[in-house]
Length: 178
Image 1 (cartoon, helix red, strand yellow):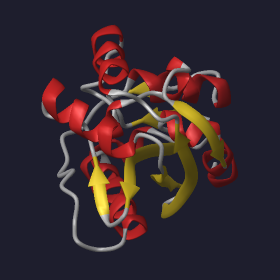
Image 2 (cartoon, rainbow, N blue to C red):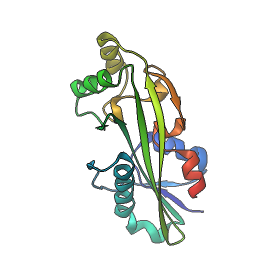
Image 3 (spheres, helix red, strand yellow):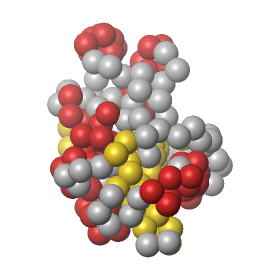
Image 4 (cartoon, rainbow, N blue to C red):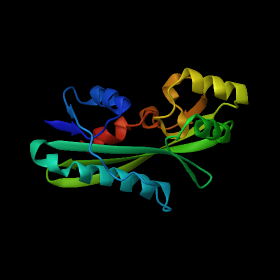
């Protein structure tokens, strides 16, 4: 089966390799703006827009996969931080609290499109201002929703749900879709 991952994310590429032994990767520009809708509808909509942006490749592949991930807490979206100050704000707000990571997965396969949403509850450790600054200086945070990566093993105290969803591609959901 010829599969295309429509993403520029190195984390999604790594995760996809655990599920599909051979696949192509291409990024397609798409509107990734959040809406005022529910986080489930927002992330599904962004994944669908990413899939639509990749529609020119549908004829070349048996399956095309697009995904988007966001962090949501108390009515607020936490996307990729704009700079280190924004990352510090996000991590301070998430510190010691539980938020939800949502991933929208959109797949084109067999002439049909399907979209699903995965959700994982994540509880942060309580972090002091110095710990937050140290984390930001030691880790790449500007390309990650919520300004953190669970795989760093630093800020997350516990989670309930899919680990790979927190990383950025819920493999359980995608495996079922493919």
